[in-house]
Image (tube, rainbow, N blue to C red; front, side):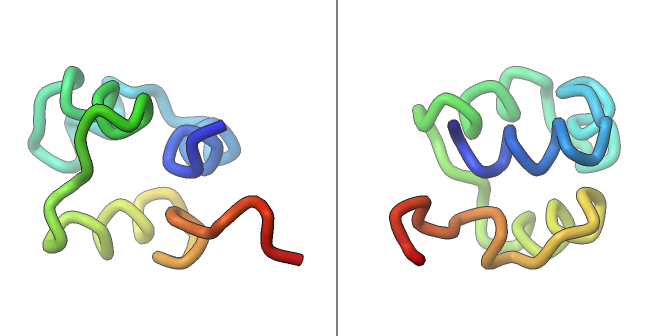
Length: 65
């Protein structure tokens, strides 16, 4: 599962809610979550803040122990 989606769901936030908080279109969130695009670097700290996680949590390798 994509980490952005996982953290968003853990936070109980919809794609629409996250999109509105970031002033982006919901389709951008969907693309990030499916791996078709990545958020701009300046959005990453704000995404982490909204989802109450670290930036590392958004992109952590699932295979790390």
